[in-house]
Image (tube, rainbow, N blue to C red):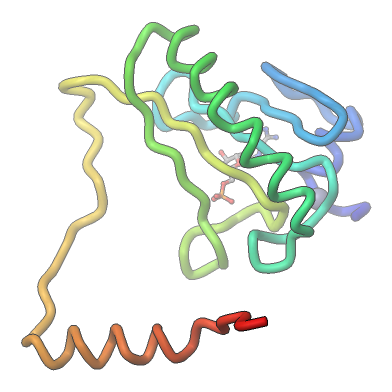
Length: 141
Ligand code: AMP
Ligand code: ZN
């Protein structure tokens, strides 16, 4: 994808602070980090998100993630991290090339996870679970 920023980083057309690279996966520092060492892990093959990524690119990326994450936290000297992916504009995805955020965390860093709420009642919870269950395709072959 010619106009994709992360493809340009993959192709070394624009610079990035690369921390890991193999033939399928690249990891580099986020230019506007949530915390020091905030790293983005991307498959080299272009896809918009886990909605359209190839199984092989997803497997390659997921396989690389723990090793990269261990390096990130060890390198910056913390023990914990948030691992996440924004899928879709409404969820905050700004760059439409599949990527995973590794965000180093430590006690007292002041970062808050997203706010939680409660279901109105048990039936709302059960109806929601039913709708999701029915919407998940199950391969019974
Ligand atoms: P998302 O909102 O999940 O799409 O995340 C995109 C991330 O890419 C943001 O956290 C940006 O700070 C980061 N970003 C944007 N441009 C660059 C760049 N040139 N190099 C490194 N990170 C970038
Ligand atoms: Zn791309």
